[in-house]
Amino acid sequence: MSQEVLKHARIEQVTNDLITFIEAEEFKGYDPYDTLNSRIPFGWLGKWGKPIGIQIQKRNPINIRPLIGIKKDYNSKAMGLLLHAYSLMYQRRANEAIKSKIDFLFNWLLKNRTEGFKHFCWGYNFDWASSEKLLRAYSPTIVVSVFIAKGIIAYYETFKDQKSLEVLKSIGQFIKEDLIISEDSSGICFSYSTIEADCCYNASMLGSELFAFLYRETRIEEYKELAIRSVNFVVDKQKHDGRWNYSIKLETGKERKQIDFHQGYVIDSLGYVMKYIPSTKEVFMPYFKKGLAYYQQKQFLANGQSLYRFPSIWPIEIHNQAQGIITFARWADLDEEYLSQSETIAKYTIDQMLSPKGYFYYKKYPWLTIKTPFIRWSQAWMLLALTELLRALQNSERQ
Image (cartoon, rainbow, N blue to C red; front, top):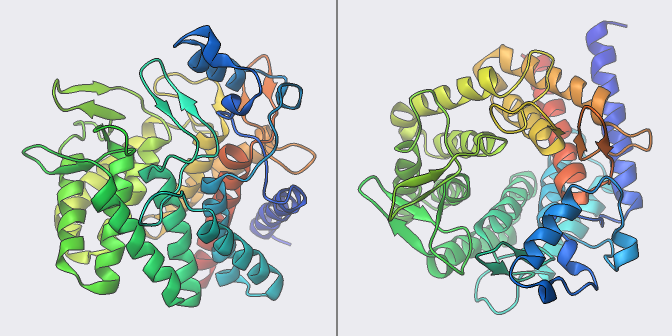
């Protein structure tokens, strides 16, 4: 048996073990940010109580959640990511066992949308707080809603289910009607949540991606205009070396400089916009290629370890690893080197971050590892990553 076949068999086995773990947990789990689901009244400590509690807990190597009243729960974004992964699995190897899980995930999402909004939208199953704002549990965001939409797109493309297309249109209406849309001379930006106007590049690009998909399916010009104008806003903010910062305050022009897995988010959304609206390739491809080159050359070591936040190397963080596998697998048809990069990252992640129990660790420092098996941040993202890689390997073998 060749080394390549052995390598692929190992990825298949790790994927199957991860599926077994996730299904044994019944798709539920903890989250790095679920601290405020605790029975401890962190708000009694003033405006800093809640954010400090969240930040301490997400860094705690000992999982004390059961002791402070935090229960394993469904997370809407995790369910969307899992729907995406299972739909891709079904495309590779159709069987009724996978289909039954897909049906459960899809129907769960439809039944558990955020209440009080006319259109389909979702939020996290916990309160999130900073010193400046509080986002209540289930308060809808563009990030949660569109990552679920991406799962529903995979479902739609697998089964051609018209109901799912109507749900996707509804999510688009949520973005148009319930989120604040900011504008500058370059284009428009969709806000992250319903509670304030802000401009987070990767979040807004998720809206661009959804509107591009809706244009492809409906040929409604408004969708195309929204997609292109929102992409114009983000590509205008790309730096000369290819990176994007995290966000910008339009009133001051000040950017938050955080370079991590969100670079992969922007690249993927930009790539999908060009896929759904091919006429945009001539304009957007240079930004895409420059961003992908930065991601490959600056944010990963040769052994497959991602930098935590450029230029910081530590800790190894599972979401960074997963996103690298995903992005380089998705665009492997542009350059075979990207597929090799995805495999290298996957091998490193399996070697360094895989538990003997079949799940993936959260963070690894030189001196300790945080092993809590988070359902969204770790397991759902890694299942999607490994599924994307296996699909890319299959496509490569067919060529």
